[in-house]
Length: 399
Image (cartoon, rainbow, N blue to C red; front, side, top):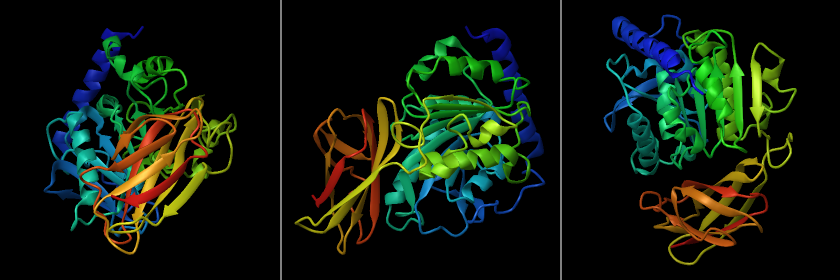
């Protein structure tokens, strides 16, 4: 049972104080580490196509597509630079991070703004002439937020495009909102400021109500509700967030070893760790990447394409997989992927593709916004399944 009156009142006070601080200061933290510590020095910008948001990106886009993080600020404050050190650090490791609110903005935000970020990233990745055209991996998206922003992240975590949810010093305020927990189907991680964090009791309450079988991690660092976001490179929360995103969105099992198993990297202190249903790959915990199969097929018609299949996450009873379609030497006006699922596996939801069938041989065709590919360009889609995702086959054809 959630201690609604006491905890919600306290967190509401924190929300107000964070918002007031952002409005009063109107500046970014003085000790911001320009560029971050990663291999791709990063900064932020805005886009006329996504008003009232702040976009963190590597100053020079790397050759590999960027996974995406959409972020809700502490206090639901409409300042996209409220956690500038933290978000720039994440971006410097090869991620596109989009925060609610304009740089140094004022006012408050809503969860709808996170969905706007998702929509914009998907659209820009397929819009000819965009600097992000074909440069984003929109099959790998995390939604996250701090304090009130964590409540915004919960509200959109059921979006089928989301790969994982990250909750920072937050927890649902009322038992009436527990339906959001019951609707979780993809991995979740909590990063909380320890028992002195005003959100700690609610986060612990949420942890105990997660669906059975859901992969989940909780780390508590005794820093209180304010976290370490304003420290250079986002401090310890920034370091750990990068590791988690590398694991969940880039398949880096070395980074994942910090979260999985009795001897995980964070298990050695100063974090206090809890784990549920976590594996590095498929089945039992391992130190090898998830199984991947690639089946290029020369199709008839207006182009040649190949398809690459990979299991992003596997847990007891379910998995998340991604498929990347790449045009050959000529352009495609549309594509069709034929997926052969192993016995006992079925699809429960999918994103960035139109699905026909749920088990056995399944056909997946492009959406209206990602079918036209220039020579050598790629588009990605993903799906969540029941059973084991290993051993699936894919072939690609023009449509």
